[in-house]
Length: 348
Ligand SMILES: [Zn+2]
Ligand SMILES: [Zn+2]
Image 1: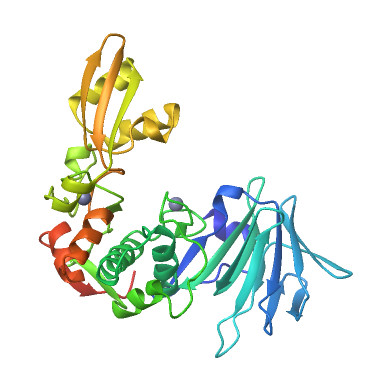
Image 2: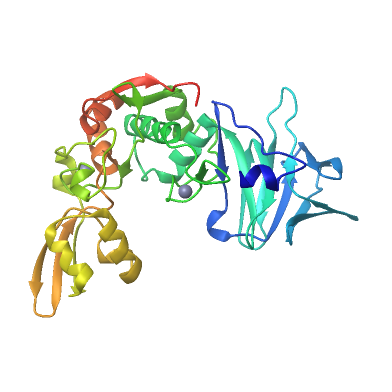
């Protein structure tokens, strides 16, 4: 494989069953990164020219240099095919990494930085539960209560367990292409507590973990995969009533120019078509898949409710169910009929 031929010296850290390889800062395509230990900590870096330690206020500047990573610390300049934080026995390394002038995040795990096409590729190999709490904190609507968060944590963990290897150099990216992920929330946060309360639990259908899909607000009824034009090979997802959304989902109306793509909206929702149209006309052109269409002169008027693809767990509906006293199990049973709660499987 390309990866094996490319990395002659250091090889990519093997994620075991309980860790995931997450590509971070994917939207930034960084060619320049700053890496430093967290206050009071130290990190050991592995490079082709040997290992060295960063501690206190020391930092390393990593830059793309042709097919190598240039690593600058103080007076030292090293070129390496990969720069990696060295896992220390009995300790989890914590570090801060940033794209200068744009973003900075603190992570726990092993960092690998290697060159890609025109950009560095930073990958954090992190514990799966750390990834779940980090994504939960990033993706949850404000004010979601504990049982809704627990349902969402199981859904997100299922996705991570079922969909590994979505990218060539890492399992998942940190954008909504996979699951949006920022840094880990504090141990006492509701996100960490909801993750811990459901540790290791996933959704299974006929004994196989399902990729837990979720969306912001279904508008009153969720969709099966088939209803939004997606192939269902395993779990089909089901269209279920969402009483809370039916009463509370935000209503929207847009006026789109009549064209080949927009005309096809009259055939019913299609996630592929919605993404195509929103790429051209912006996300507000069709916020969600719960809508009706009526022609009006040269235009099409689209009236809808809610936001997102509407498949799987509905975040607004789950929040509403939790407020009415539903447990996370009630919420999962409602949005994922015919599934069972299972322990995350081990092995590939
Ligand atoms: Zn992705
Ligand atoms: Zn809903």
